[in-house]
Length: 308
Image 1 (cartoon, one colour):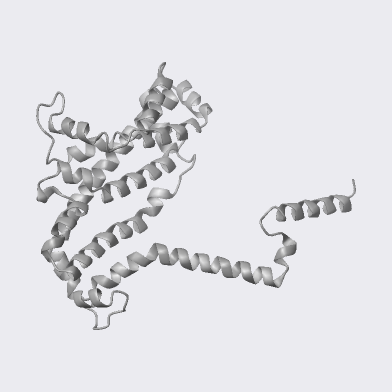
Image 2: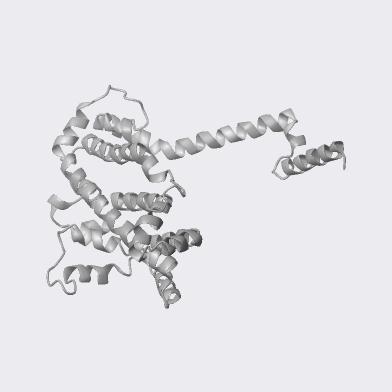
């Protein structure tokens, strides 16, 4: 086969690949189709930005707007000026720093428990593969079909009178941390990720004398940074916005997170101060995520799978 025939076939194959989209290369050469498509893309992009960022931008605007302006002209941009004092008053009157600290403690505990349970359970089911592993996997999968509201009462009774402890966990952070570990979705997610890891690395580690604990700590965990990052993001976001369960088990206001305390204070403070408190509590996790997104989302790939 000559080079000319090979080049012609390659060009023809590229044209076929280009024609597999909604619009073919011939359609893109038409000015009307090209302009209409790009205009549609721009409209969709602007719509997504408005829908996604609109409520956050409105909250940021209302946080520094007097109450009367927010009620009379909710969409106007500061008709009577900006009231920066709302932010300071919200920080001091609502004690955001105190409840923010509670939220951070709860989120860190939930993150630690979920990562610990998900990685160890996924390691046992995927790498160690016990005899009744498939039965355990089926049982874990079955829990996903049980509505969480159905488990609310038995879980609360367990926290009130936990077995073997003889002391209620109500008004302790353990009442939020421990139930968070029973997350079947994270266990299955980590298990499937461990299934995709190369078994040759595990066999090589065993031949070098690594036991189950050394294999888990020195080989599996360094290779699992991507999935640990995903689980971490899910855990922190879920703990930060959780309302019902912390409200039930943390009855002491001094222990409540922002998600629970702010709605309870709404009737005691002005609207502009309340919106400022909401804006501050919303900005903090966004800033934290932007600062640590590389730690959470960047994967180290196979870089950690080295013999220690």
